[in-house]
Amino acid sequence: MTGPGRCPSCGADLGEGEATCRSCGSLLAGKREVVLEPLRQEAALAHALLQSAGFHPILAYHDESDVAHPIDPEQPFNRAAGLMVPIKTAFGVYVPEEEAEEALRVLEDARRASLDSDESTTS
Ligand SMILES: [Zn+2]
Image (cartoon, rainbow, N blue to C red; front, side, top):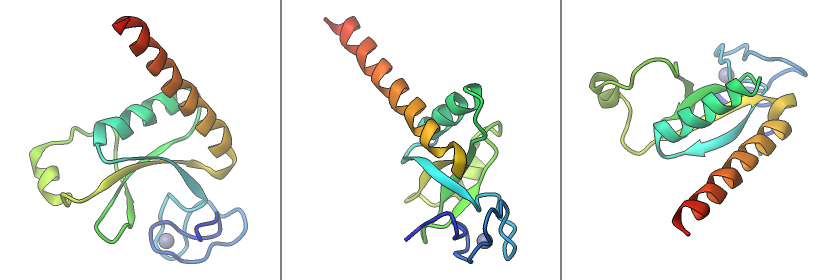
């Protein structure tokens, strides 16, 4: 169970309305994951979309033990960083719990819009 009362980074219990984990300092505490992609650029795209729509998304990667680590979306994904990131990983985008419902709707709309435009260009 992953409710808002649990830190996604270390699993510590969070107090009501706490935005930062007290035991590990994770920014992801109190956030909900609205995107999970195997590719960094896909997650970064969703992150950029949400940011431009006025949300407060955080880009993070999951390591092998499925612990999420926030990363800087502006930072180029260079080869050195690539070596440090395990191959079997995934990238997630987190938004504050109160933005999650709306963010999911925006992402859904964007996905549908891109599907529509794909169909219109192929037919
Ligand atoms: Zn924590």
